[in-house]
Image (cartoon, rainbow, N blue to C red; front, side):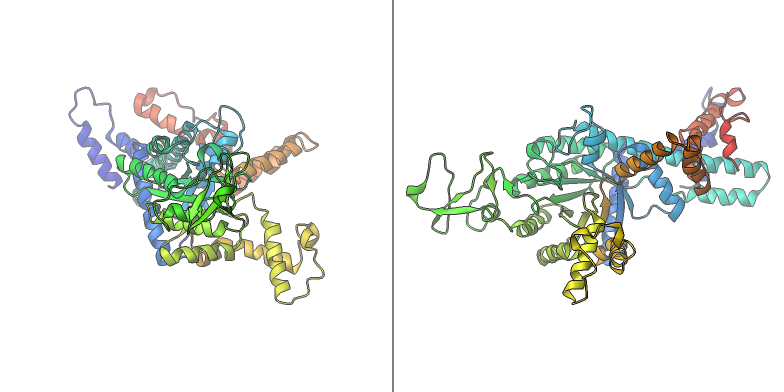
Length: 530
């Protein structure tokens, strides 16, 4: 529907209503255009369709991969999307990621917490709602500026410019993009997972990422002590999420099944098996066991019978069972195949390093069973990217017979190597990692979980060092405000960004000439007009 169509529609809605003579149809149309999404479910349905189209585009051409950054506040997500539109002219294939780690560390009423699912579960859905509130406000702000330009063009009698602005309004691209949201291990049993999934979908999430760890033993994927669950337990939660999507009418909803098996050496349960070779038996086959005879069964021992042998799984004092060392990749592949064959749409393999060869090796095995398999991948700040890639280049050089005597592999992070050929090659591999991994390792979506956590810390450190030091006010003016002005950062006009001009528009709609507006000649934001 075009802008003029909206005006005509509003005119029909208001025409002839007793006492409505002060209601302006074009003002109504503007408010409707600025508030395209009426609910979180509207957003979830809209963004799910985007993701499905993007997944199909990636299947046709792996160069069409998608990206996101993790954002822990609505303002951060809003500024990210405003920046993307400014620099690239489109938000296509750019999403938001909601990190459970950052919710725990930054959004819990308990204060900063580790990534162990101890934060309030509803804080996740609350952040989704907050992110979309800020993105919708970004829409309203940008459209409001277009409406002001339209009024100015009309006042100047410039019909051509007015028509051009209407075209921009008709073709406006929303800041509302898909959110891939972290539901951790489901915060309890399958029913708890279903209830939280509904809250997250109602807030606007079209893609939920769930991991195969034990919920009450949940650990960050890059820390030790991870404990996985048997496949049937995990599938119950995948089904719970699918039911939540379908119940709420988000039929294109995306489920991202994450496996932590690569770094998880423990399980809390021995899987139930009906017959040899079923999924429970396959899970149990990875247990680290000792073969025993009946006379060796001790008090409280748990034993498994397989192929006529009696096996005693190794059980720790924590009552957890141990997997065989070196079985992680095989368990990952089985996890992924089983998840995709039982309702998951995308995979997430949490690795210990960003190595394309390692990821591709697993994906190729998965694709033997499910050819369309593709990944969401964590370009994690928990990796030391500089050291990892310099070591990868070092190893490649050594394998090729090149002279590496000038380098100390253990010290490759050192600034001493920054200008070396090895470091330059490593940086180039980092630069092209997403493109190369999308093409070679089946990665559809690249995300960074915690980038804005780190940028907030870094920028605050730099400002504190300057402002509280010898630079004083110049530390803010030179490195923040002057840079904002010259780089065209939208929030340099922070009153406008907070909604002051939108409020003025509404005051004029509601009170006409009697409106007391904030954006007059004495508003200091006018100093930033030049």
